[in-house]
Length: 412
Image (cartoon, rainbow, N blue to C red):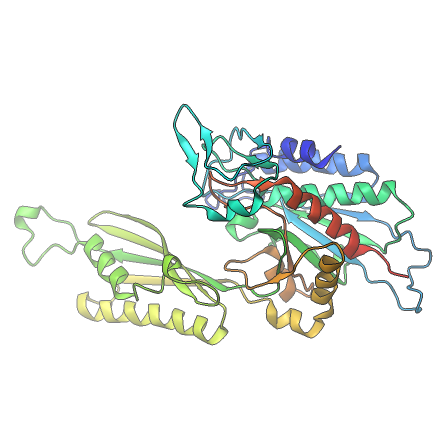
């Protein structure tokens, strides 16, 4: 199957993850997609294909270079390739209707004439980099799913090509597809020992050329405010409005240390949810910083603010719970930088300019790196992830496939 048709088939599966279900995978569509993928991997000739009850797929592309040794006599490393099956709950992933804009002309793209939904170049100027290319877009009502079905497509297509071209010598390659990455649970039941790779790459980055081995340190924070509700006409010195106290906490944080005011290595506090009544209000934050010391400082600052508010309104008025999610993989990748250099060299050999940069987010690879599987992140090719304005330039996907083939190839 050609990669375009393969990708269009993949996005027909609704695999939106949901952190509220307390299941793995968190939604039934992910398991449906996993079963389809497991069958496809067997059909194209991969071996040791497994699908466990939690929705994790593993498979093997066996080495075809004799004894598994390079010309120098060194053992060829077992390389892993990983991508995730779920799509973000930030936008609908149901009934995705992709279409191909051929030979993009550099103008605004009318995604949905009936609802006048337009992908505007003034808001998304990066799309101008792809003028003259064929681009896959949505109808403006759902995300596309290139994050990370493009990554899966690229891995499967590269493996199919290698199986069909045995003259390209490679070592053993392990494939892993995970559920629930978008809700921070993709590595929860990933069996690193069973995977058996020396190192791996997640095909989960954005634009062509991206190569990342640094990511945020990340934590989730829940703040609960307990209030007292009485009739507003009799509220004098009795009512304690939890919503107002929650607002007070929110504005005590630095207003410029938010996602919309930070970039590069700058960290932030991000209020992602607020629900409440006079009686009880919950604030949900994510805390991010590349620097571990600043990350710890941010957590302490939130705890300090809660203590300060409790001194004003009474002990127990506000409760805080902070849970670390993942850490900066740089700590684990730097000792084995040859795995990053391997990709940089492969990119240059196929005409791609490497863009080594920090991830302003995280991937399964971040947690896996701390579990003994160093795992940098490589571009999948899409743009505007988690958005109904998501798109995928087809040449970027084709280059990612070419890159995978080059990475695993054994050189004479």
